Picture 1 (cartoon, rainbow, N blue to C red):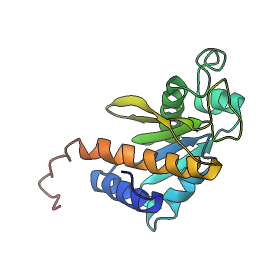
Picture 2 (picture 1 turned 135 degrees about the horizontal axis):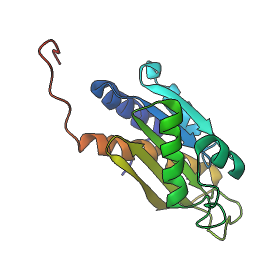
Picture 3 (picture 1 turned 90 degrees about the horizontal axis):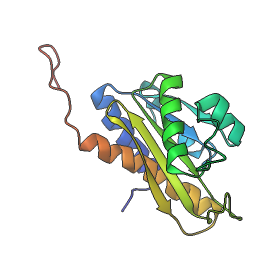
Picture 4 (picture 1 turned 120 degrees about the horizontal axis):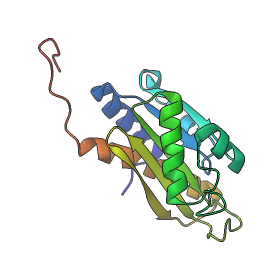
Length: 172
């Protein structure tokens, strides 16, 4: 089960700070909610680099480097788009890690995909990928659940990798 967004944000930012890592986000479906959740945590500026909210398809291409043929192919509600968005945010914001959100919050289908279909992308020094979610509820429910999943996803990835060994003057 995922944590509430505020708790998940605090846990993720703490884990990133412990590693000396930074984070950026690329948002579509969540429209800035993920960035707002992260920046609501005191001290977030030590880790959080910034966000690109690309609600319109053409901005995903021009601002985040989503391949121009992707919208007509797999679509912007796809794992491929989520990965491209996260990769673009990481590169453009100069962060260690990036998260992205794209999907259908409703009330109508998009690109033939149902309401609640969401992709959360991630990119980091160890690669990139995306999770596909099928979420229930109204727009707000889908957006909040997407943020919780994104924050928990990266936290779990960090927990699965070892912390760097402390150097001679590093007293953790």
